[in-house]
Image 1 (tube, rainbow, N blue to C red):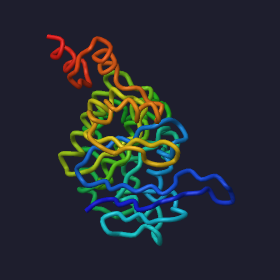
Image 2: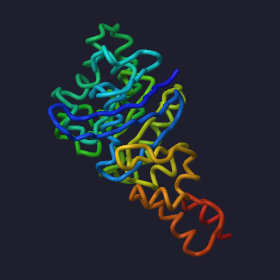
Image 3: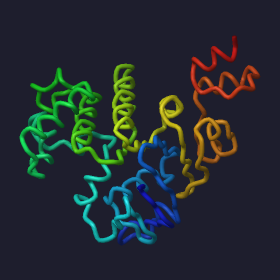
Image 4: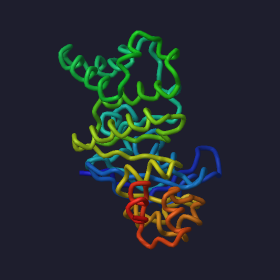
Length: 265
């Protein structure tokens, strides 16, 4: 089962502006996939089409065999969870626990199941110290983890993270890895949009590169990040470790400090 995007084009209503054009991809359960490219390449529009925030102007999107055409965003949300770049766009309750519980109560789950999911999401995202605070009093980087906790509690099979490392410190980046490891252990797919190539190189096995409102490359992370022609077209730089390795003539493909140290030694 998978998300299948086939020949999708999206133009904004009442506008001549086309955001993505003839895009096709498949995201399977259990995968970790990063979509990279400069602003305006069509990344955010593409993932919003996946979870049915936007309807394709042309083409089809199916989620585990379900055509999204005649479905609402709410009907697709249990299958495809989306965490916005700005958490303020998603939070609407005045209590952390209520925020996590909201959809679960809407679904009329048992109190036992609501508590189980809530506690699991709180522990995985590391937000327990902030439960007594108003959501908008929580520091913005931590607030992002509240929106992630909501999606973890809903437990969709596909989780989209939009620029998750933006504003995060070392703790936040480590906690993101904990969340992704947890999701993958449950067989979930994790899809991210990111400009942070260190984060992408460390955590994702597959990269989809977008430019000119379309996909220009799709493949193994190490192979993609060592394609200067593709990166140049997408206006993306490789991770710093890869840049250093290439500058000093190391032929081994390295993506992080550990691999760079090993290659030098």
